[in-house]
Picture 1 (spheres, rainbow, N blue to C red):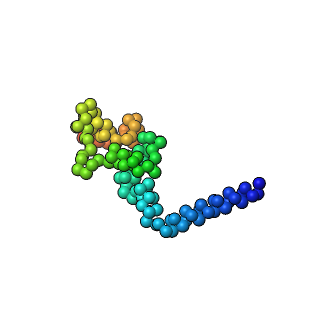
Picture 2 (cartoon, rainbow, N blue to C red):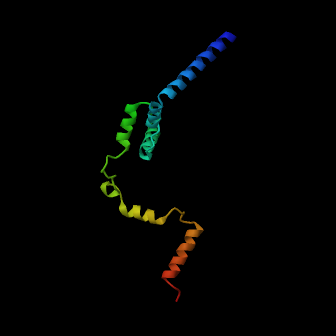
Picture 3 (tube, one colour):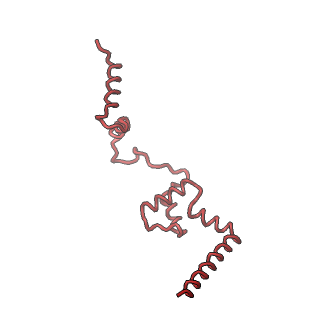
Length: 126
């Protein structure tokens, strides 16, 4: 039993030493591989994160999967993201009203006080 442990540790030590030697001899290859998996460009990094959130089986190690992800998630240079006007089923009045209401609930005391101040400023008492 002790012999099996010694063999496993020796094999593990040789594997770690071999990997360390490879990294020491090829730092550029290792850096490029790491930057492929975790790109310094924020847009590409976000695209990979979005692909993983869409499909948890997304494999960053697969170059073809990364390229497909970039093709789907990143807009080509010069292409503009669609605006609500380009989408036929969007009610722009409701979107504008919702945006102007802010994030406070309708019955929030701060919102009610602000409305009273604004109303009294516009319509002073007689």
